[in-house]
Amino acid sequence: MKQIKAFQIGCGRMSKYIMEYIINLGGEIVGAVDIDETKIGQDISKVIERETYGVTINSLENLEELLNKTKPNIAIITTMSFLNDVEETIRTCIRCGVNVITTSEECFYPKNSNPNIYNELDILAKAHNVTVTGCGYQDVFWGNLITVLSGSIHNITKIKGSSSYNVEDYGIALAEAHGAGKTIEEFEQEIASADHISDKDREKLINEGKFNPSYMWNTVGWLADKMQLTPIKMSSKTIPITISEDIHSETLNMDIKAGNATGMSAVAILETKEGITIEAECIGKVYTKDDFDKNEWTVEGEPTTTITVNNPDTVRLTCANIVNRIPDVINAESGFIPTSRISESTYKVKY
Image (cartoon, rainbow, N blue to C red; front, top):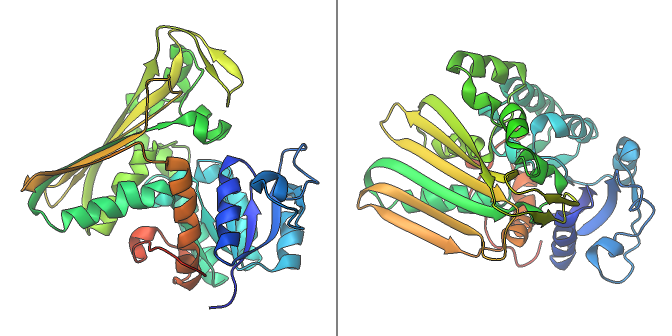
């Protein structure tokens, strides 16, 4: 395989590990962009915290020009959570003939939350012979780990999962998407509003590209797709998480007042024609000193089996998955292809 030439879009917390891991595997960072004026003009070594690398962080406004100049074979987008927020960046990469991998959580399986934009990008990617996919921590710990476990179960009736993580570790976009810092009234209006509408109205929002899914909404769709199940109904509920005393958020640069949301619990439920229900909860919040990450899934059937992972390093696991997936994306069929349609992620010694 020819050398991996990667272009980093978004030089925040996640990019530190992603760029470092790519270099460690023998890949090359050929360019980087951001919107933060304090980062523009710096060498990426400031982000990676290593010796000068020789690549300067440029403005996102110059993305198309830089892609055409550097000719990478993969662009890594680590900016926002929702497809609508990264759509134009993805389009630019596609038009420049560059494959895309992104940590955007909705891009993990956008077919069930923003199908029109997903289909548009799929058609565009096919026309330019490139691949677009979204992955990260959920690719393994909410996805392939569960489907592999299911391969040892007979007569599955339900799959139930829960995963918790500290929104402080992922940057401001994710913290805001979880409602951290909002009053309960603001949370209900801006985050949980989709819970209070009919299935018909939700479907309308989805078709209009105005639905903001919880991360598990896309995950249960991914699981059904990977397991070749037929969805017949989906529902969700979002609950604010509060605390009885003020807590400081470094990411939001604010003190969250007692009684306001420090994050949320979001549950997505998918019912299938085959009689298997998939129910998944993600708990994202600003952690207290007593909180820790936890990932637990139960496959109910014969025999019922539970797997628990305590204290997973979700940030670095996300970044390593992105980096290990890069050759898979480059070699995949063209289009907007979820990892449910690509082989399982594997360890890479070298590119």
